[in-house]
Image 1 (tube, one colour):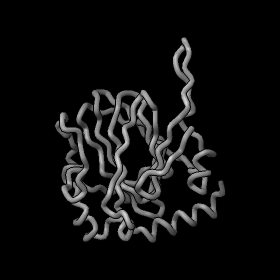
Image 2 (cartoon, one colour):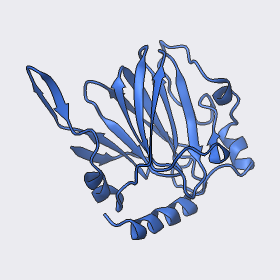
Image 3 (spheres, helix red, strand yellow):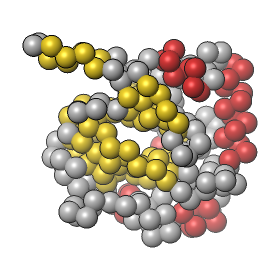
Length: 203
């Protein structure tokens, strides 16, 4: 597989090598040892999540308190999404910026987001099924969101779709409001946590 960094520090896109024959397709969708070479530590997957979304569904922008945060390895099992990595780390050189990656069942790419980054996606087809490998269990008291339609962030959603948001995501604060409320992780704190993980969990 090929692992390439995205423009937002702490995020990578993973493109697997696919082997096709008359039976179908085989691929390695996740390799902790290969990721370790890029991350400096092996991600400790403790929870897997699956979401099934209608066309136009937008989930996010979600993030968790750091430490411990929640790193995510996201891939699509059915359908397609535009996946968004958003830098919400206060003090980061790229604070407020984002990068989008199409995840589908053609290239079967995955995106890895380190702790402290915001994550969102927009489903491009009905019944789109997304698999998340997470490095921390869900903790509602430490989970937060930023409104994905915040104009200051400016996520570019597909023009031919009407966004469908949950009440929680629709009511989430703007990036500026989340920062003012002290909800956002800091770049320094995320870097410190990453350094600590690298020493505790060698590659």
